[in-house]
Image (spheres, rainbow, N blue to C red):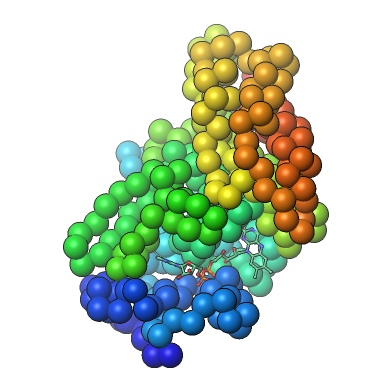
Length: 289
Ligand SMILES: Cc1cc2nc3c(=O)[nH]c(=O)nc-3n(C[C@H](O)[C@H](O)[C@H](O)COP(=O)(O)OP(=O)(O)OC[C@H]3O[C@@H](n4cnc5c(N)ncnc54)[C@H](O)[C@@H]3O)c2cc1C
């Protein structure tokens, strides 16, 4: 196996253009190295991103929102004053990943690209309407985070592409937002992960807008569109929340694995949907349910 350490983004894209099909990109290594040690993958070329400092960092602009480089570690996100101030839900979701050790090495880009069912960042970013930038020598393209995932641990990223940046738009930053995770042990990925971001209507009784990201229950994270439809523009109370939770539970296509059965995940999805929606609605205590 050849080990390449490009020193700039153009150099990395050049290497991927040449070796993409036979190469693997190495970010924090928290998932990739396990797969390598288990002999699940046999790349001819390992392309390490550690020297690409331009891919690491967090920036905030009131018009654009939050920009997070793909190599920003989960620990940087969890502890960033900018993220804690403008998007506390993402800081909280990052803090629930595994252990400090894993979070200090694992990156946001790696977490998205690995697409492990039960990963914590994807549902949070879906609810926050985030986009990703994918770069290659052919150019750059932007996708909604929800469009990134193709199937079980699979994404639409082409072999010559790198995920370079994640953007959370300014319009998502002032919203009430909650991420809840249900797992057996603290280091486990989510059996069920529910992220909600919502804006109350001016009357503080109805829900003007809501976005819901779900992880853990199916092969890929996704947006709970049917539940959103039930709530958008409606009075938010116990019965509309129960209806939305039931719709999400009916719609999901749960997986069974060593951590939990499909039936258990489906039932827990309804429970955690109810809790997340209620917590988000109550966040500023303006109008109790
Ligand atoms: C014990 C343990 C517990 C864990 N628990 C959780 C958990 O509770 N919740 C959770 O969300 N995650 C969990 N994880 C996963 C962890 O968050 C990983 O950090 C993450 O999945 C991968 O990030 P990484 O930077 O280490 O990526 P790597 O392992 O380096 O790479 C992962 C994959 O993404 C690709 N890749 C990485 N970066 C890019 C890029 N910029 N462009 C294109 N492709 C790229 C790699 O080629 C590889 O296929 C756990 C991991 C471990 C080891």
